[in-house]
Image: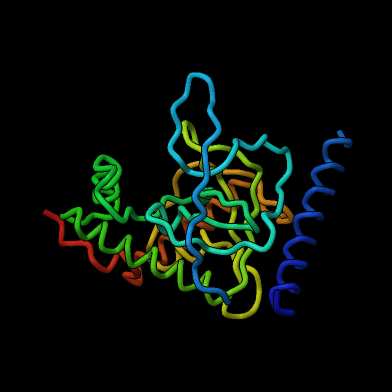
Length: 233
């Protein structure tokens, strides 16, 4: 790990520790290329059939943990908000909290249709084409910049995917949420599961309001999918 990556990781770790301490006090008070995927087996769960998405189910943690020394893994499952990540010999697919990024395929036609209505585009191909553009943007960022995965191992229902916050080094050298970058570029909408932010003074409503503000700016500047919307019918 380079000095730059080490410093970035320590900064994020400090923020997480601070968040844990604050939550505890409140409770007591009133450049890497993507690597190839490792074949893994899925642990059986009685009464459930789960896709082969990696490893035994993790226990949900009350506090966020850092998935150490993450590396982006090439995978057909990867989208702008859904990423397969390796740490050592362990791999998991993580889904971002707070945002729903554009789909890259028509495998989920209902969701693609919903996105087309939300972003006011007339054809689903515009959604999936821009979704692939968004996924390429994320892959490029995570290859060029140090990043960290923060997770409580909260599972996406009926899968072995886990929700996570991904923090990446911004162009100014400061940490930024990947969700923020997607909203700024018009690649996602505010949707899905939310969570408290470790080491962040903002509460959930405040942060979600800021995400909506980023969405309005992206729409005004016709960034990403907003620049491809057709005229009203």
